[in-house]
Amino acid sequence: MPEGDTVYRAAGRLRNALVGQVFTRTDFRVPALATVDLSGRSVSGVRSRGKHLLIDVDGEHGIVSIHSHLGMDGAWDVYGVGARWRRPGFKARIVLDTNVSQCVGFELPVLELLTDADTALSYLGPDLLGPDWDAAQAVTLIAARPDALIGSALLDQRLMAGVGNVYRSEICFLRGVLPTRPVSEVEISPLVDLSRKLLYANRNRVERVTTGNTRRGQQLWVYGRRAQPCRRCGTPITRDTLGENGMERVVYFCPRCQT
Image (tube, rainbow, N blue to C red):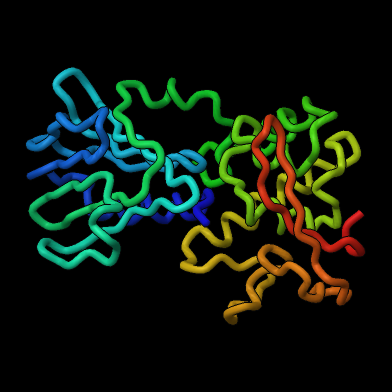
């Protein structure tokens, strides 16, 4: 499931393939951008911002950014020129060609052009993997919502950008906190520090690991382990849903280790 670390890695791959290159062809396969042609323009940068990915392209009147969000199933692949795609072609939403590579975005729920990306994404909280990460600001923003459930606050990208559903469950387990606890009853600073530590440790890993064990099936403490024994106490892991404003997402926890 794409989270901040997934987008960070995708940005790194695209950066290596695109920065300094000139588009020989661009194919936007979404109705709103179907007539856009950025061929002949050069790429000046690729960056991630939480779960958002930006490809900065030199334009006639300044930088224009190709903004994408991976959602639940999106992905960016990099191929050599003429190489066969690893995913079905009908799932492609954008194809970017240069003389040395082809970059394809698949199943992207958000794909748009932004003329001022920094302003458009200014609502996001501190980026856990950003060069300007500010733990104190994240703590302040989360603490300002004392009545929110901590499991909901962790997913609120306006408070801290990068945590998704997997990390939410893992962070709460490691801190021994039920995701249904209100923010006012949680030590926020250690939780924020742990969030940064986990995402940073996984920023270059193909498979996410929170247990320290890289063996398949052993990487996570609770996420995706419904009814399986807790790795600490043996109690069956519980799966539930949690959300606000009608946005319910699954959450996993140990009813004994977390209070």
